[in-house]
Length: 170
Image (cartoon, rainbow, N blue to C red):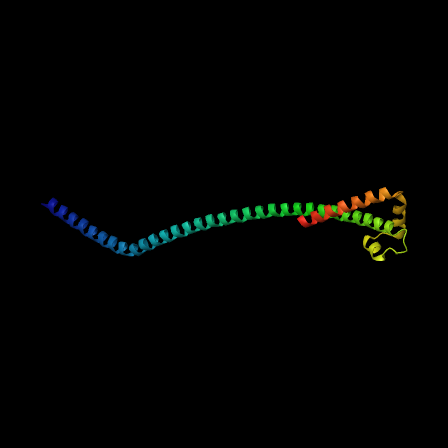
């Protein structure tokens, strides 16, 4: 019987300790529950922020790629336009040279036409072409006969017509 009493007393002690431990566990669970809820909320917020960061990075990369493509296209267009400008400048330079030549030939023809008459060569023509009287006289001396004069006049007219048609096309 003494063993039974000791066993019962031991059982009662263990039961009491078990109840105390359960009470402590329940009170600790009550303290931990808000922390668990807070932790769950923080994990969810962290995941949302992480996804937003990933999305933001992807959007930024897409915009960056788009800007780079636009920049490359604009640089290519700029290069093409510079090339076209250079070509146009060459064409304009050639046309200006051709115009200067035509003016010179025109003034030569006009000066030869008026050589035998008393009508003076208009100074305005000389100033526009930037040729001196001496240049015109030297050119006049290069034509020996009327046939050369007519051929030169015909050539100058053809060049003038050709130049006018080029200018009208552009």
